[in-house]
Length: 207
Image (cartoon, rainbow, N blue to C red; front, side, top):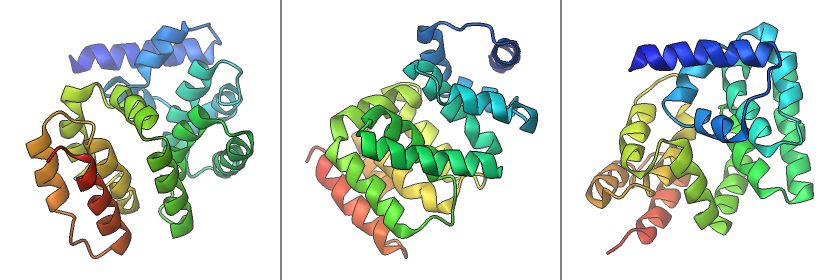
């Protein structure tokens, strides 16, 4: 199966670079795990200007697709500026769907202030049902969520500071026993914010 994902990733990036149109439904499918992880490996610094232009597209599907790809090149100053400016503008415009895409890129930076983490956390709570629907798609469907999250939590390439949001995603899994077991590992975290998030998530689970 990995060869199929690898081939598709190569083909899609060829189409992106040659500016071939890609159907919105296909773009949406491409932003979910595991395909998106393969696509990101094909992104390089030469793609930055093109991807940034797509990240400002009117098409929400294309915009979302491009923003997801930016993780691979997150350390470029152009990307950093775009993410921060777009987050501010999305807040001013009250663009909920855009903020759902951008929050992940903001959290790629381990040095962002705790106030930004709390802002994102409050946003998630305020738009809980919509957010859960979005991340369920992004992580490959309900039945794949817990496995995907546990892999990311154990992967050092993902920032330690991003753990709290992965724990939020885990609640979308139908494996309630598995979710409770996962959350219990973090309820006494050395990070008070993580403990706070876990306490809230436990209230979202069936008793």
